Length: 299
Length: 299
Image 1 (cartoon, chains in turn green, cyan):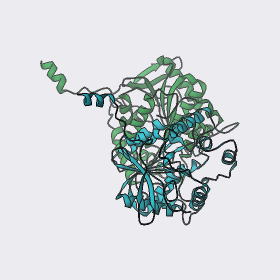
Image 2 (image 1 turned 180 degrees about the vertical axis):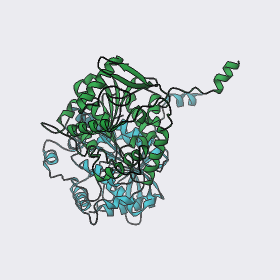
Image 3 (image 1 turned 90 degrees about the vertical axis):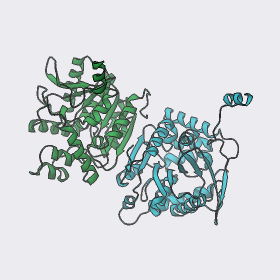
Image 4 (image 1 turned 60 degrees about the vertical axis):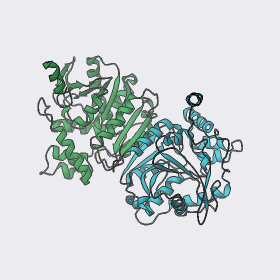
């Protein structure tokens, strides 16, 4: 009786973005840091420029974990994953394959955010069976333009401002310069710092430098521009904020035009971090998209 | 008992897009033809180029009628509405205001499709309180481009093909040139012809000519291009097919960029009639958008 009453009084706290233990997967080449939580078919989450496991917003990944087993992954050289950050998207995709192979995952859904969305596209082209449904947020196709030019004034004014550090910079560059978007950015950061233990080391300049090199290489293309997207036949959901200074929304328009099976969803009053700003809407849309068994993207 | 059994055995068939009686509203200037059915807050539906009350897809308007009172409206000079089709969007908006005033409707939601989406924008700018939430499908802002140039080869090859008539033309120009989209177009037409009684007279060349003149005038702008959209503060849902030959999807991109509070939803493998091709998805998204009480468009 006492135990029963206790069980009723103490809410069951599921493992979450905030509490999931960081695990290490040893493969023949590298050791990869990751976290997994939630219940349902697996959803691989591929992170943004300089982001680690700690940069996933609990409001998004916990919401998704109600219907999916969420797998957060640090690519080589990021966080506690060993190795060096490679200077190409293709080499990052090779690491992601090694991680999935090491976990014994032959197929899954994917949420690729920014840099992670490029890796997801590369993986889908190399191994079409790897993904069932793809969510591509704030990202760009190979041959896209205005991809992470951190030297441009709209970004460098924040990145080089000595008064701004760490999360304060993130709030400026991930959110639109409006009161409502900046307030959403503040709330996002409040959620990020809820995780206080077992955190990843933040990315340093070597990580940033190699990832920037990968963006520059990704802007190159040969042959007919965007024609390679035709081979990505999976249902895809392309999402962006309309005022994305880091990877222009025009790249999402190009993805929608050239991916054969993609729905495009664009949010107002938001930038690179639109999925965090409108986390309730994004999570609802993403869950509905992933729950669909249709061969077509519309959900 | 017998009556009770009969009531259980005979399914209740609600009034629908197929069965709703055409009503006539007399105002001081014109008499407007309309149909209304369904239950819930009112949703005004503004129709496309040359379309009449009979051109609404039951798969869409019946789905919406489960949560809304759907009001289909023929503007002046269309179907059994009296008067002449005016050559400007602004004059068409004046007729829509007269119709709403005549019904005693001071505010409602709106679904503006193509030409109807332009009229909805004009109305929102002239009388901001008129709409609560706006759905703008396959339409363009004032100053947009590639708006209904029926002389361009991709359209004229169907419009001037002597072997194509009526609905067969509609299937070609509203849907993408893929097997899947054309099949969806065929299904759409099969649904349209389910209404066999109390139909509207089809639009003739005078209707088309005046509406084309209105499109040409709508392409003109003065001052800063698209700046007028800033005044439309309602939550808006902008929808299009990625391969819209009648009103290029670039116009929907411009709406998303300049409307301050709009979500953009773009469907793959579809054209001007994407809402009919993906009627299940569109109806679900539209109902979720309309059901939201948030001041922000994301839903």
